[in-house]
Image 1: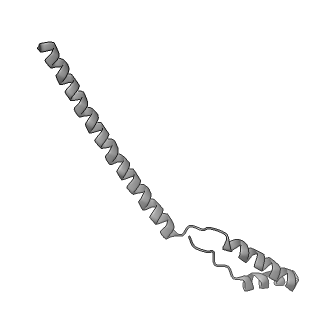
Image 2: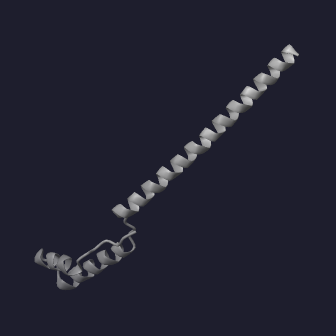
Image 3: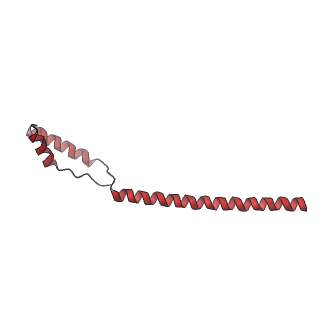
Length: 89
């Protein structure tokens, strides 16, 4: 995860231009900067990695499901063959 880029100087200058005192503007800027440090932001590479992991999990699940379906089909065929042999024999 990436940190958010935040220009504290520009933020404080904007506040001062709007009439906020210098001390308050700097305090607000620092508070916002600190809040951004604790924020977890997903970047495009983070999302791409997660997407790749999900696709792999889906592919693995499909492969496992296919193995189960084939196994059940083979078992079903064997049971039908056993019943036919029992009925004939």
